[in-house]
Length: 197
Picture 1 (cartoon, helix red, strand yellow):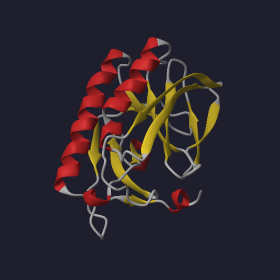
Picture 2 (cartoon, helix red, strand yellow):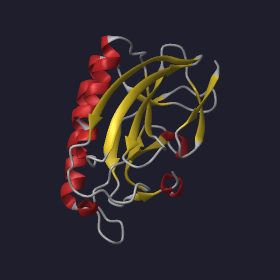
Picture 3 (cartoon, helix red, strand yellow):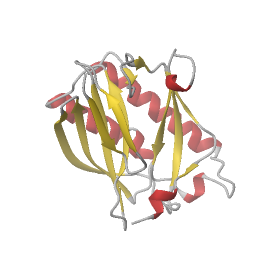
Picture 4 (cartoon, one colour):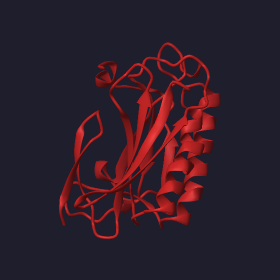
């Protein structure tokens, strides 16, 4: 199996994508910045055509809805072992009209699997944090934690339409691990690279 290098704008990650699996990259842009903000995950399917359109719009209708209106979902790309397979572009703006916090602040979500140890865990850094949803020490309000959890549940409920499971892909030859749950971290994450334009 070939490995694939993906630049998430926070780090360059190398993953092995087995046959029949794919890496999904949702690319977002933020007003005033030239750096895209990507959210990635693996699937045990390769969505194309109308399935890819549906996947893009499901992400836009769920997780993007809690993002600041300064953030837009632009493109969803499907990668297989040989590289990009297909991309779908449609601009979907965040629905939170509140003032956006600095772009290096992100909602942190933890992906869990049945595998023990670090290799069995993954993370999502969700852009578009609104100022009113986090306090001065980075704690999320109970309201936004509940909203994010609800949107994650909505997105995960859609996935069976196109895949059996979301999976964690690995950098070695290990089999992908199905994601069993996704939880919202009560603290926002800070990423220095996102301050750069």
